[in-house]
Amino acid sequence: MDWYITKELIGPFLFGVGLFTSVAVTVGALFELIRRVTESGLPYGAALEIFLLQIPYFVVLAFPMSMLLATLMAYSRMSSDSELIALRSCGVSIYRLILPAVILSLVVTGCTFALQELVVPAASYRATLTLDRALKREKPQFQERNIIYTEFSKPEKGGEEILARWFYAEQFDGQRMKGLTIIDRSTPGLNQIVSSESATWNPSENTWDFFNGTAYIVAPDGSYRNIVRFEHQQLQLPRTPLDLAARVRDFKEMNIAQALERLEIIKNSGDEPQIRKLKVRIQEKYAFPFVCMVFGLVGAALGTKPRRSGRGTSFGISVVVIFTYYVFGFMTSSMGVKAVLSPMMSAWLPIVFGLGIGGLLLTRAASR
Image (cartoon, rainbow, N blue to C red; front, side, top):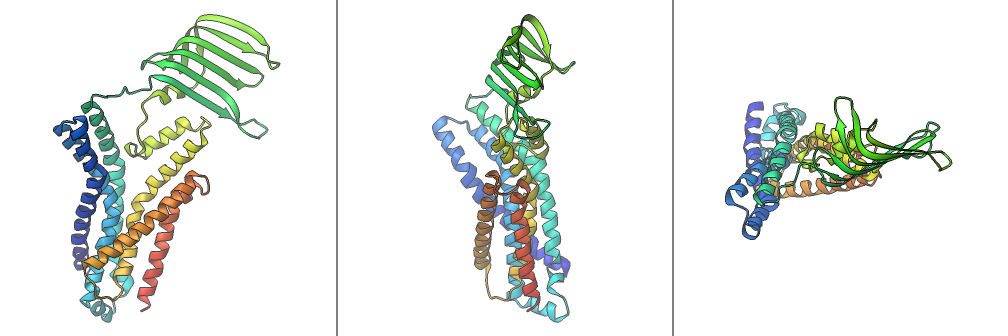
């Protein structure tokens, strides 16, 4: 019985992957590539490479929707042919009947997570680089001008955060920063302003080497305590400005580990909206594969409902469920970014809500 139901699920699942991927890649990538080929002179070879590199991203998006379509089509077909009635008359419960769907959902969840972490970020990043090179607008792997880093700290006695450091570099060539101004208020009772012609990061000593500049020591009353000219001076400042100057990948071009590294870089910057948004997106990366579980459970519960329906009805129900779920997910994501919900709650609330709805539908189906 398990193998029979599994075979009934695999066919519609593969059909759904092909269908949803085709639609998504056509709308999300193909039309834009055609426009770039005709208007921007994008070479056909580069366009084909970019198209192939973008497919894994859309396959991952298609997996949950395909799981919903597969369970709806398989169990609806078995219900309309009275196979479920026959199995239940033999003493097989609804919970036992949907066990193959649950196991397949778990497998698809694992595949979704693996593709999302190991394949999609690298492929998406390579597609971006290929597009930039093909259009002869290749960008440097670093920010060339106006590197700004702001660091805040909390007083020991509590209270609101205060400015600890402000770092500004006018230019950066990948190795040396030029035209620097640093305000350092990290030491209580001692404020320092450093103006320097250039600076480089010293990895062996984890310090910054500043060249040809002036250090202004400011007393607590605002007067200059000391002014020091220097040709070379080392300062114990964080490496973070150098990390910020590195080219930032788009979120879909980062896996969870890379996103967490980015969060560590910006968490002391004081840019709360950006920090909160990144925390929400990281939680969404953890949560997204479990949409396969939600859709598998909901689809199986709806499919076991007695009805005379074909593939068109199953597809229509899938569209309604997908639209409803993702609208709700978009709302909770926006609430997380706006700090109405915590990052974890905004990402996992649709999963918990969906599993609850699926469990309720399944309980009602079992009681019939």
